[in-house]
Length: 566
Image (tube, rainbow, N blue to C red; front, side, top):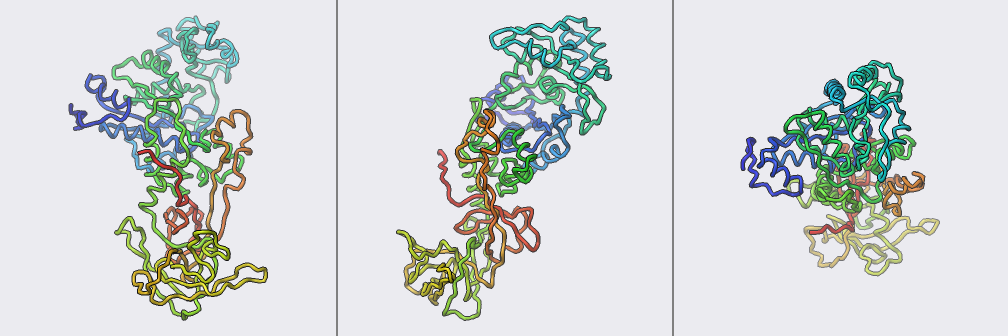
């Protein structure tokens, strides 16, 4: 079956239950188009788990030749700020997605939603209730006991309409009246026990100012916004599964038109040792545990982007988690790191940086310098090469020399040899100690006919190490990171909900700074440029860098303990 947009349904292999339903709906004439939406509340920055939702929204629509809208679900003026809504557009662009429309619910739909509420009042499906929030909670009942009807439940439609307009006109104080749906106070699903549709709230809205003093509740506004937009599949995580009957009730009783949207739910994503909850992330920012929403230790998209993670890695990771048929899927952080390494290995430029320098003097080499070339990326011939330098004075990593080497140590020892990456084999003839008995520097000789690519020395050398020339290096700052959450807290949200102080679960030294020596080749590096420091890890240029001082964030080490299931 071919769709009007040219998509052939017979060529689509469904990857989850939603795609199976979409295909069936097309064939049964129950839908004409796939339209999904991203409906974030602009009250914080997006994190990695959000990326799963938005990837599902965009990729599902794309697969069927449909559309995806970005809608700011800004119905709560107490939490929302323009800063956050602005960031969402930037995040989507970074992920490689462009919404077909940008919509602010407050501007586009508040008038229509209000009219629908009046219509439902006149049909006897909503009423103004003057119980306080505590009184409403006390009469809602339990999972085993029905709730009690409000004493205001049986007012006439005309009286309810007058009172609702009084709410709108500011004649009720905050918290003194709500508009509630008239459903069933004995319903087994407690969400259906006369939920609140509107509340009185005097708060300045970041888009509308003081235009409204009543605001629709999410469960009422959300399905109607979907319907008003023409959304066909409203996708959300499974904690909203119990809200689906309410979603459907508001569509049936408020919208009443064909081709109504369907709410469908996927598994919520959590990651071990990672704080995801927006409330806790805000606390970390507000109390100064991190340096803003884009701190490289943060799971926000702006944070992992600054750390050096790639959009492709994030999308590959969330796609690997899949749709899911359980409430929550928890994966180890190493699963995310696997995809980060995979992408960086393919795209990152190789360079030599010595993180903990030890000086080496080549005693049989003059004051001249000698150039050699290093591949920028062995996985991509088109990436080219860059020039590096060998000279009389060089620096190697301290850990690449040992006075008391352990078994199978193939690096430099006194009297031993090692190959310098791209250059010569050198032999250590003398260890020079300082006044404290620590190694100050090494005196070595190079083997003239042992240059890489033209080695005629006949010497077999087991070890190869990286280095920088004293005439071809400059100082850079390295920011090293550990996981923000201590290893023992696999489920930080659970610990926090049980009363563990947030300071207790945090790694005390999750950020440290050191100084390193980098090849001059890196002097022209730009913010967000990504590199593999040979034998050490992947690094990204931080936004705090200046022209005269580069700062590199440790993105991820080279070693990978995670094994993907094939």
